Amino acid sequence: MKLTQQNKDLSGRNGAPLRRLSIDDVQVHNTESDCWTIYNNKVYNISQYIHYHPGGIPKIMLGAGKDCSELFRKYHAWVNIESMLEKCCVGVIMPDVETIEEEEELDQDSVENKS
Image (cartoon, rainbow, N blue to C red; front, side, top):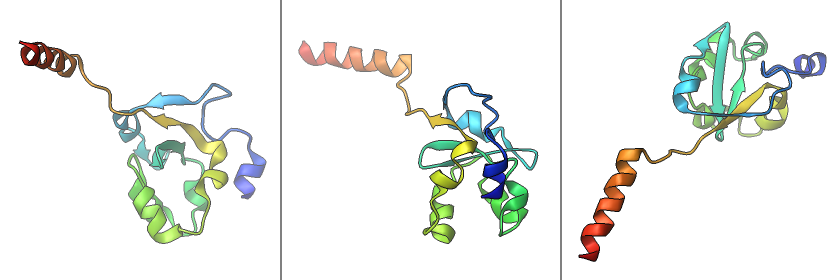
C-alpha cells in the first residue's frame, strides 16, 4: 500500500494508455528487475513490488512472465489485486485472433459447402 501511495505510475507507461498485449509480450518480462504477470487478463508490471511481497521474492517469481491468476487465487483469494496493483497495470491480453491461413480455410470451407 505504501509503495502505491508514494508512486503515481508503477507500470512504466508514463501516462500512455493501456496496451494490448500478447502472452509472448509478457513472457520476456520474467526477471527480478523486469517482471510482468497476468491476472484476469490484465498485465501488471510488478518489478517494483517484488521486494514488498510478504511471501518473498521466490514465491512472487513463480508468476513472472506468466498468468498468475490461479496461483494468486489459491493463496490470496481475499485480496483485491486489481485495486492493490492498479498503478502497475500495463495493459490487457488480446484475445486470440485468427490467422490469415485460418480465415482462408474458413472461406474455402464455406465455398465447398455451398457447392
